Amino acid sequence: MRSRRRASGSTPAEAGAATVASTLQRIAVLLEAGIAPDVAWRHLAASGDATASAVVSRRDAGTDLAGAIAARGGAWRDAGAAWQVASTVGAPLAHSLRVIAEAVRAAERTRDDIRVALAEPAATARLVAWLPLVAVALSVALGFDPVATVAHPLGAASLTGGAALMMLARFWTRRLVARAQPSGEVAGLSAEMLAIALSGGVSIERAERVLQDAGGAVDPAARAVLQLSAAAGAPAVELLRASADLDRHEARVAGRLRAAELSSRLLIPLGVCTLPAFLLVGVVPMLLGVLTATPMPL
Image 1 (cartoon, rainbow, N blue to C red):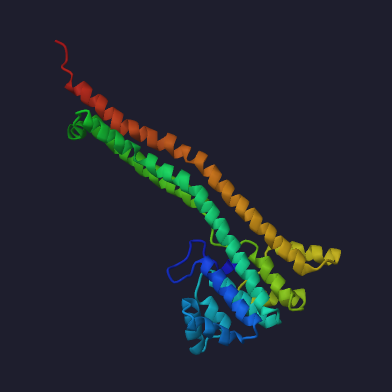
Image 2 (cartoon, rainbow, N blue to C red; image 1 turned 90 degrees about the horizontal axis):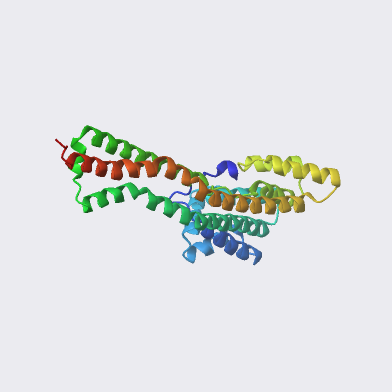
């Protein structure tokens, strides 16, 4: 659930989304074959699945199955919440796992698309950040002495100001790139969870309570769908899943737009910091060296 997700990313103990989706799909297949949930996890653990082995270990220690799944962290928190919701209301567990697996996989595809779109502007920003140091190397190649420049008060002030602008540019650029990065949330998950709860045949009020017990909540978009369902007399489950699909689509578009906007936003620290730093670190010391080396006319 969104309330359980950390936007900062996964820790080393947290499995990647692709691994989560694959494991959930395999568990769903075993459940559809008529295998009991605990036995399904043990079969998967025996096949060498690290997550399944951890779940079985926690299960043997007395943790309930949903809690053992959620304890893996990351996307497994969402899987554990879905397991708890489906088990509580009696919804088809295998189908619920497939739904969550697809939602997690869609979120991972969105993050991959955004990372690919961000790769070029981020790499360009890192390359441009070294421009002032290139100016220093150029001045040395032309025979100017940077040490002598530092000894001069104007030269020292120029280099200090250039270094400060370089640091500001790097900090500014990192902030812009970080803000464009995809979040760790699974878009539409609240609606998917609520759809799972309602597919068990419980009332909307009961579904909301089960969702809260699992660590989630009904977001405003899902609540608007429930109101539409009540007003129109349409099936809430299908409307919620359509809303979740729309949320995932919008998240993908918004992420790609952020990546596209990053290219133009990176021009701001380039113009405000990097280019002035290039002048202060590279051009001003060379001019100062020319002026100090030129003999004054008598």
